[in-house]
Image 1 (cartoon, rainbow, N blue to C red):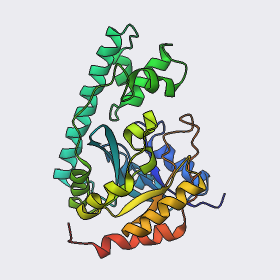
Image 2: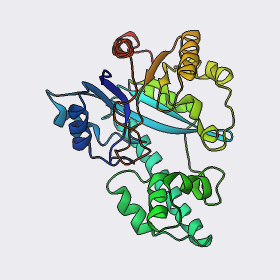
Image 3: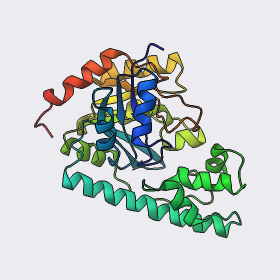
Image 4: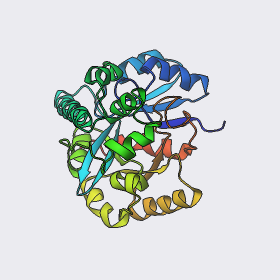
Length: 287
């Protein structure tokens, strides 16, 4: 294994399977030297991971924020955020509460559809982390209503599913502003798997959409990601050059039993790390 970094990982602070400590231990075991923790709408796992990693592994603070565009969903990654800022933490708390309320409504819809799952079990699966659709999917799987994680989304809780419920989200531009306000670097996550495109196969007009995000302060785009063909990565690298964005990447690792993704499996060039390291100093005070 030659790749040394993974800039897109999740822990039990949101919908990952491993605790921050376990994620750090696995990264060290796999020979990584740097990971970024990018949990959904929370930074609760960062301090524990950084403390546990001291002297063994570099851990960048990050977050992944779900945002809305008409008919679709866009995920925005934020790197180097000051995760102790009270205003930043308060906004993330509001987003997590919206996730919890949405999941509870989905459970009620599933009961009405005749495929009941237990809200108590969903909360148990989430533990101390932020409740999300993956926890509802796991409850559906455990109850025997579906045979795979993917089927839970396709049949019931995906955007076009009968148990889908919208929740309050920021717009992508608002998320960029939130990340910049916390001193962070905003990056568009998995751009070819944006929202409805991931669930229905629809094409998303990335080139047509990027100018608005770049004007708002977008700094990067995820060009290295599981499932990307070499052609897709080349196209995204060309788009990154065209719009002056840093091409980033990572595995979107949620755990060894989730989606057959391996920590560190996506080859991210060290030049990406070097460009990202330079970004905070170059943009200090510009938010």
